[in-house]
Length: 426
Ligand SMILES: [Zn+2]
Ligand SMILES: [Zn+2]
Image (cartoon, rainbow, N blue to C red):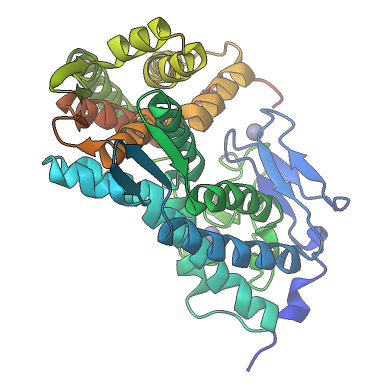
């Protein structure tokens, strides 16, 4: 039985040595930070590491609270819709089931994964890791669970889901009586609590137990120049070649696959961007949903839906949908094309700003899913047959594909390529 706690606190950053920036590969000597302090890359401005004293003690109760709120948000009705004497109650998975009912199961699965399964895996995953650590033990298969959390986190879209629900809620206000349920309030609290939990988590403390001293006699300002690779799983710097001369393919500390640059980054990103451009056309031409009201159908594409909202005087809503569904995917495609061309031409122009552009599209990318979540809520809730119902359209599937593919494209682009030809700060 091995005690884990004594190795965990306090974190001595001096022991860690060097850290390489994930976005530009620039090397930094790790320094002790004041409580709550954050370190950023001097070259590109990317976040490097932070120091939260007693991080486990702070994050664990918050994740426990998040777990309870998540259960509440899924057991109780989200919103209820009252139309005449009919009442339709909506739980969190109603949208998923409704997509299956209309023969669009692929969208149902997408909404289920991003709005329910992955957020659940992230919360329970952290509880699985933090609870034993708090009790003084190292959890079984900790590295596997941590890398699972890291993989699913970008696809855990709780806040986007919440915005989608609020949009559909506002849309329905003039159609029928909308009654907010217990789950809606639990969900709002869940967002606050899980954000706080994430902010209080200092992941570097979890890796202290498995120290690994990187050694290399090469000099240089970037990991690549020193023949080293930074692990994206645990931030460890690893020599490219092992002591016995073999090339390393996985991190000795967290077992994640490692590579100096993302494999075939340019080709893969290019192929995904082209696919996204092609799908962007049907996504905007075909209807995303049909609203049936008193036997009359009204079919809407993304753009005609926005125009209708403006005509109804719902400016804020129209702007949110327009921005999330049209501007964001278009900007992502344009920025990725620009980054691909500039890297291919070995451009030295405004490297820091281009990295910032990449960071922006990485952050805003998933917000495009808001329209899909709004449609999911509407079709799950407005289900009164010929009197009033909302039916999803094929445009929604094309649109969701654009969102997913542009997120994959952003993930497959390696921002370090922007810096590889740069002469700045070398
Ligand atoms: Zn950097
Ligand atoms: Zn690692």
